[in-house]
Length: 312
Length: 106
Image 1: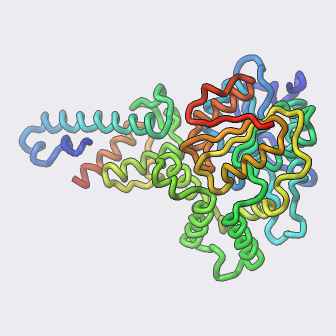
Image 2: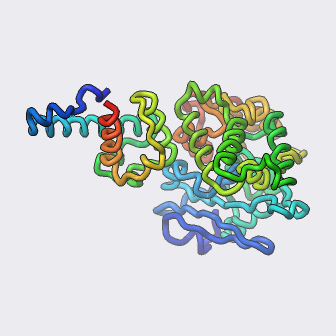
Image 3: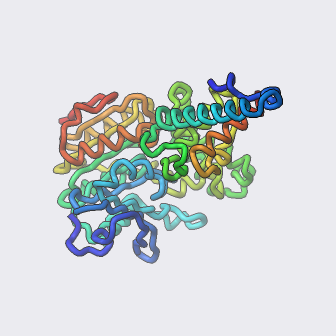
């Protein structure tokens, strides 16, 4: 629980931003405090690449009435032109821990999505006394070959930002965004499932509308780190954990997620049907229900359109 | 589908009252259609999604707008950008915009 009297989480209910100072810089962190007496432990939400603290509006609608949320916008792992000073997974883990420390939160649950998972995993591995529950969605020991290839392409573009292949005008940005979304999502499944298609379209629109080359942004944000040991050795013990994946996910496949789950002692492994990599958008209600049931320690058997197994 | 109840110019000339009744029916029908898409296909909880609700009050987010844009494109052949759909104040305004596009296409 948060320490009694801790200013940010004991303050009035609602959502607000807090600046987290970390090393020589600071970054924003969204805090959502439910109305009524504090009950559940705060949930630290670690977003995936190019997501922000504002990407969780639907999730907030489902859970914010009962669950305090801490959603940091962790700093990008690389600053343009300063590749030598890139952050590591350990640095980002330290930055995330700094957010809960500055909010005086002693114990907290962790939700790590996509490239947020390596940070959540490390927090649970190193601080099992503080992490009450760990939930990972879209986790892979290594990037899928197509994603690894695209990241390599992004690194090449980054090295030569003036290359004719860099996306400088809107049509180039749209093309780069399509390329990225085409790798992160399953386009075949999208043709058959409206919500999968809609989620891809939302991400595409956001990427195409943003400044700069979306692929270089993705690589800077955290993408290049996926090539460097996202899954640390040593496993996780002593933290009730859940790993889940959409059945159509091609960016982090069912086998990839199962491999991560297998390194966590006693993990629950779930495959959500009719879902792809952006399952928190595609099946937002089921995603939220799964998380609240797991946080409450209630049986997951009643969940619809999921297969559930407990690993050794 | 609402194509069959789109008022034609000849209706207005023949009977203004009947024209306005027809237009009103079309508005109501399109509101029902939009609310149905938002709640049944885009996954918004039905309670707040009323004609009078602002898009924010109704919980209409980028995902809901994307679903709406795709459904009206598939079912009505209308291409309306997400930006244009999101620019409306209320659910009724949103339905009216789609209705106008549909009428213009008919």
